[in-house]
Image (cartoon, rainbow over all chains, first blue to last red; front, side):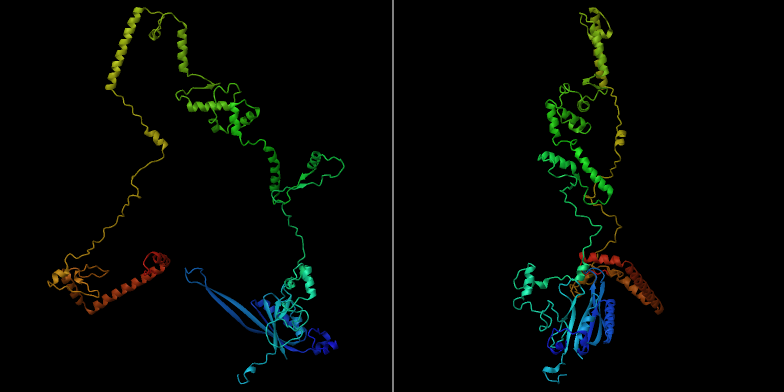
Length: 127
Length: 491
C-alpha cells in the first residue's frame, strides 16, 4: 500500500480506507435537478444524510429558484371558435449541495438509489 | 476584466464536471456511471475511471479497460468473446451492444409460472386425442394395419378441449355439438335431390327415393307444380298424400269455378248433384225405350203414348207459344228495361282504407305564392318632374360628386326622413318649418329631451337584444361570411 502511494502516477490505484487521511480533499458540488419536487427532496435528504454519516463538511441543500417554462397554445386544432388558450408549464427544480471530501467517498454516496427523473451533476475542484 | 492579458483573462478552470448517466445497455436502471461533461484539463484521479465501454467521454489516460472503439485491432480476449457469441470478427466491438444481466437483474426477472395462464390453444384444423390408454407393443405380433388401427381407435379418447372454456355450460354445449353432427349427416338432403326426384318420375322408382320424398311433405309445395305429373302415372304406384295435395292444387288452379261442391275421391270426379239428377232422370226415362220416337215435349207432359193428332196439335201449340214468347221478349227488351243498380261502393270502401284527393296539382310543378299584405306602392319616378316646373331654362343642373342631374333622378324615401317629392308640397313643408320656429325655448328643449330619451331607450333595448341573441348572431355571421358579401358584419 505504501508502494502504491509512492507510485502516485498509477491512475488505476484503488485507495483503501487506511489511506483516508492522505487523500486529497476536493470541493465537490453536487447539483440536482428535476421536474419532480418530491423525488428531488428525497434524494437531497439522502445525500446529505450520507455525507453527514461520513463526517464530511456539507453545505446545503441550496435551493435555486425554480425555473418555469411556459407554453401557451391555442386549444383549437383549427382556427375556428372562441380564442381559448392552454397554458402549460414545466417546472425545473434545482438543488445544490457542497461537500468537502475525496471523490471516492462521493462516488459511494451517489451510488445510493436515485429516484428516476433526478439528474445528478458532480463538479470537482481543488480545495 | 480584460486587463489581465489577452489569453489568460479567464479564471483558471481547475474543475471537472461529471454527470450521472445510466450505463449503456444495463438492465438495472440504478446502474449509473459518472461521465465527464466538460473539456477542462483538470484531472480527477479515482473518479469515473472504470472499464466501461462508453470510453469516448472518459479520461483517455485512465485504466487499461478503455479503448477507443476505432483504435486498431481489438484485443484478443475481446475478439474471442465476440467469436464465442457467434458474432462476426470484423474489427467492430459488438460487445458494446450487449446487455448485461446483473445478478440482481436476473433475480428480478426470474420466471414464475402463472397460475392463471392457459396452454396455447390448438389451431383450428388440429384435433387432439388422448392416446394414453393405447398399448403399444409387439405383443400380438400382427402387422395387420386394420386391426392395429382399430385398437388404437378404440383406446384413444378425444381430448376435451385443451383450452378451458370460460363457461362450463358452453364447454358442455360445444362438446355435445360434436357428437350430434356425426349422426345427422345421413338425414340431410343430398345436393341433387331435385334431379333425383325428377328422374324418379320417369323411371321405375327406387325405395330410397320414395322414402326421401315422403319426408318432405309440406315443404316442397311450390315444387309440385314444376313436376310433370300425368294422371296415368299414379295408378301403377301407391297413392301418396303428395299426390292428393297435387290434385287438389290442380283442381283449384285449373278446374271450373262454377261447381263448388266438387269433391275429389280417388281421382274420379263426382259431378254436381243437379247434373247427376238430370242424368238419372234421363236414364230412368230412357230405360223404357219404346220404338216410337219421343220428343222432349212428350216427356214433359209425361205421356206414355202419343197420338199423332195430338202430337201435331201439341206441337202446333208449342210453336205458337214459342212465337208469342219471342215477340214478348223482343218487345220487352225495347220497352221495359229493368235497371239493376249494383252498389259496389260499399264493398270497395271496405277494402280501401282511405283515399282523399284534394288536388292533383303538386308543389313540384306549381309554386304557390305566399300571401302577403300588399306593400306600400313605391314610386320610382316622380309623377311630376321637379325640373319641369321649376325652370323652363335649358340649363340642367348637375349636383354632387358624380355630377348628376339631381332634379331629374328618381328620388327615394329614407327611414324617418321624407324628402320633398314634389315641389307642390314645398309650401306645406315651409309651413311646417315655420310652425317649428314658433316653439318656445322650453318646448324645444322638452321636445329634444324627449327625442334623446327615446334614443337612449332604443340603445338600451338594442344592446339587450344583441346580448340575448349573441349566439344566433354568431351563427348568422358564419353563414353570411360564406354566402354574403365580405363586408357584412353582423356581430
